[in-house]
Structures are given as structure tokens and as C-alpha cells.
Length: 267
Image (cartoon, rainbow, N blue to C red; front, side, top):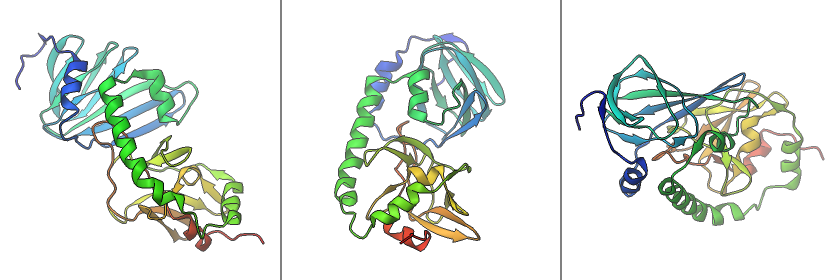
């Protein structure tokens, strides 16, 4: 699709999104960077992808760090090429990625929160089409996990209690935290992880990490724990999918029964 730069367009993102929901969804890895009062969302978009962003409640600054594409924003289309800074008003942006693209949004984060769902509720309005797709994907994942997590046989209360009482250490990791269909707030893959790829630290010395406090149990998990030196790492047991069509990625889980190999339970 070729459209002259700065040409006016009359494309309704909601209508287009409704039409795209039924198509195969592309994996677009997302990483969130945090600093004092700021959250930056970095997204990798594969060449040939047509992507529709959530409707932002306020205007903001965006950075095209890599690649080129046709951007639809504020009622206009324009071809953009990295490196470029772009200001956009409230509403949705759309892009046809002509090459592999790396796109960055900058958002205010006055509370220095790392809760992505809570932050998204402040920044953006999600379309009915997206919410329906997300609900369907959550339902499929939840149904697959119900039997899996229902069986806690072999997981002692003492083991879980010991983990819960450990102090929390702040460490870098490559997961994001969202409401889990399994239990509470879980850890999810914002990008694809390959089998045996390290995701982040789980235990450091006598402290658990924030990542460890969010990982849910599964009888057939997709991650395992591995000790290197005085640290225990969370590692992908298999290839794990990241965000598909903007929805959250696969939830990261371990078998809690393996914790006895890394935690000394007080008798």
C-alpha cells in the first residue's frame, strides 16, 4: 500500500481493527523501560506488519529508532524513516511497517509503578475488538491451565510459606506483570523466549526477586530454575510465545515442587 506523504486519509481505526482481529496475529516483542517518573514502551514490529495502537487519552512523543513505514496519525499518512521523533495527538496510530521497525512511546509514570495493566488503563482506551480478542485468548489459556494448576500435590505449605517470607530484592528481568488467569498477578512474556533462554534472577542470596513473587505454579510448567553461583535463575523450558496481536504473551510458570532444591525449609 503506497500513500503519498502527508496525504489526508479517512480511516477509522476501530473499523479496521474489527476486520483484522480474525487474521493471523503477528508477534511484536515489547520491552518496558522505567526511570523516575517515566515509562518507555519499546516495540519491535516485523516488516510487512499492519499494526493498530490503542487509542491514547493524551498526545505524546514517539521515537522511530529503526526502519521505515507508512504512519497513519491525526488524519494524515506519512512515510517515516528512522531516526525520527514524532509528536501525535490523542487517539490511535496505525502503521504499515515497510521494514523491520523499532518504535518507542514515552509515558508519564508519576507513581513509578511497574504494573503494566494499571499504567495502560491511565494511558489508553482499548477497542472492543481488542478486548474481545484478549478475552478469547485468556479463556483458551485459562481452560488449558485449570487442570494443570489444580493439582498442588507434592507442594508443601511449609515450602510456599518459606518463599513468601523471603525479603524481595530488585533485579532486572525480561517479564511483565499482569492479572493472571491462574492466580493473582502473574508474570508474562512480552517477547518470545527460546528454550533454555534466561529470563531473569529468581533468588539472589537469601532474597527472592520481584519476578519470583509473581511466578505461578503449574504441574506442566514452561520454565525451570537453575543455580549459578549464589543466584537462582528462571529459564525457559521450551519456546515461549510473546505478545500476539498486541495481547499479552504466555504466562511464565514453574513447578513449585522443584523449589525444595533451592530453598531450605525450616522445620
